[in-house]
Image (cartoon, rainbow, N blue to C red; front, side, top):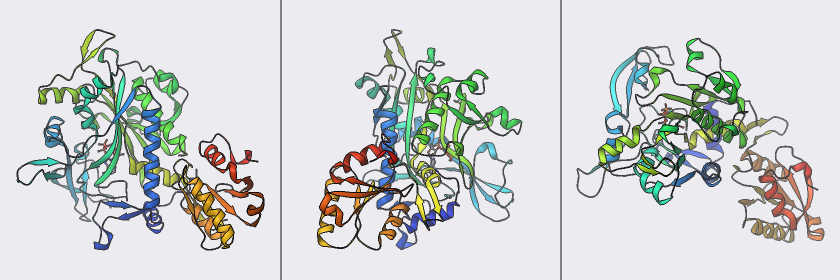
Length: 484
Ligand code: ATP
């Protein structure tokens, strides 16, 4: 966990140099707002998604997952309001001529970063349109969010999974938005992935969160609407205090905001780089009574990572009205049919999460003379590098045997090229937490050296114990200093 943040441009350069992220179709000049991810970054992204899914779905009793399609019946997007309203205000700076998008509530209030006034050019719908089948005229859309597929499948999932309120439905998947001005590397792109949950509660019992005690002692930087009006700085508070002093008004939003912050911290992010900010009244959608964002201190300012709105029964009611289907569910506790409320909808971009973990782990280690990505081992693309100390067949064969054995459990990498120092540096730069060196002694006593990325400490361990050691280090059941 480090705090020497580099600029977003330098991060993009680093990612390109290490083969992590490229402009999509780069050999043809790229395409603005689209990116391709190289071998190690696919692993990091998959690890982020895996950890998110484990934490939010598999380790809970009250949340199940779905995987909806990217293109669905376009009526879904008419019902949700996206066809009519998923617009951004298209503006152009009168001074530097740069195009941008702003929110309706920002017209006349915000200026371009060069200081110039904006000229409003009109509304633009952000959905990508396509045609289904060979005959023109069957318009459909690439989904601009994953959430609506949760609402459209709500009753099928709730009944087939026999879910009882309160419960959530989660989804991870691609989303597409024809952003007017994609920028800040992966932060605002036109194709990205979302990890979303719609959390449903009984409307008659929508205030109390049964899990609130899990987060009461959790501390977080808070910036409420009132504090923004008074030009105050964010204040670090325990959730307990924020609820008691009515800084946050609903337990459910407090619970989800704290839980999401905890998820980032559990994977090595710096807690102080986060804050929660309440939306001002004029930022709120008409159906939402309260909304907060979990924000991160990016090198280009505090920006939204994750939105958390109280959406009442707006979406389900819209789908009931448009589909003419009964989407209410039977609640055994009250013996009533209910259209639940959405108490919170944690919605996080995978690429924004990736940027957080990259910034918080990027460490330009002057003493070592190379970059060290101090990624949490769970997120590291490669869990261990395996190096023969010398290019001698018997040492190489043993190193390959160790690699083949460990590969059954972890993503490990065999590397024989360059000096051992160079190999360590290469491993550090993509965040490999452990490096295993095989030498002449290994042939005799069946031990190897294992090196810890963060401290550079090395210990000698038995080859037969490598799997267990690496596993307990990744799970943090053992610390490196405890290994004998
Ligand atoms: P913004 O105000 O930044 O455009 P939003 O409020 O429209 O975001 P949501 O509709 O709430 O975003 O989407 C949920 C999450 O999806 C965001 O918090 C963000 O993490 C991610 N996301 C949204 N748009 C993009 C994008 N263009 N590029 C990358 N991630 C995005």
